[in-house]
Amino acid sequence: MTTPVRLSPVDDDSLPEIARFLHENLNSGLSADDWARALVPTWRTAEPTHGYCLRADGVLVGVYAAFFSERVVAGRERRVCNLAAWCVLDGYGAQGLRLLRALLSGGAELFTDLSPSGSVVPIDLRLGFERLDTTTDVRPNLPLWRRRVKVVTDQRRIAGLLTGRDAEIFRDHAGAAAVRHVVLLVDDRPCYVMYRRVRRKRLPLFAALVHVGDTALFLRGVGPLGAHLLVRGMPVLLAERRIVGSPVGLSRTVTGRPKLFRGADVEAGDIDDLYSEITSVPW
Image (cartoon, rainbow, N blue to C red):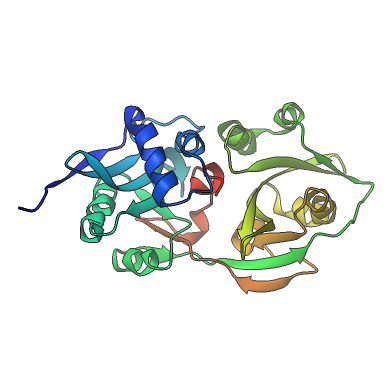
């Protein structure tokens, strides 16, 4: 007889088991403890779960971890589901789609998939997801300093410099494991920048921008930011045009890795990388 496979939500009590499963089967570069911490959002959310899982005879055979948030997108508050980490054991691939369907039918109004594997992209597209434009400027980080630009890294100072939406974003992500925060003071005017260290060809030498608060000021301060990153072992900056707003000088342009979204009355320009695995999971 075929063993029944049971679908259930991932709650706080099951997080240690889920984290071990992801460590052993998806990315062993993160310890089980790191996975467990990363899957708990640093922002407030009304959602009590962290995705869905599959069990056969009580044994975990599949997980789709997700991050939920309540955010104002395209002018109104929406429940957002970020599809984060999908892993199903061999022999249960057909059952794995149950995880995705459960998330898509869970009541969220907007879905993002910001780091899908190559095999997931066509599945998303068949389900009505749309591609984001991931055109990216690749810029060498050079030792360029400017007297009128200061790079602030102390989180207490950053908290005091930011106001409005940037202040809220910083509070929600200050403890997120995958990102770092700086404020560029350009003629004493603050530009909030969030970035993460990423690997390309297994080399952790790249800094990818996640959020830029003031795109005009950023372009004036990108040189000193690059110098700051260079001395921290990141000689290359990856700047997606949709995050930066315009081309970055001294760079070459490439097509970035796929990112997708699905939502009614939402356009690609409304989507960012915040409140997601991009900010939370330091793979």
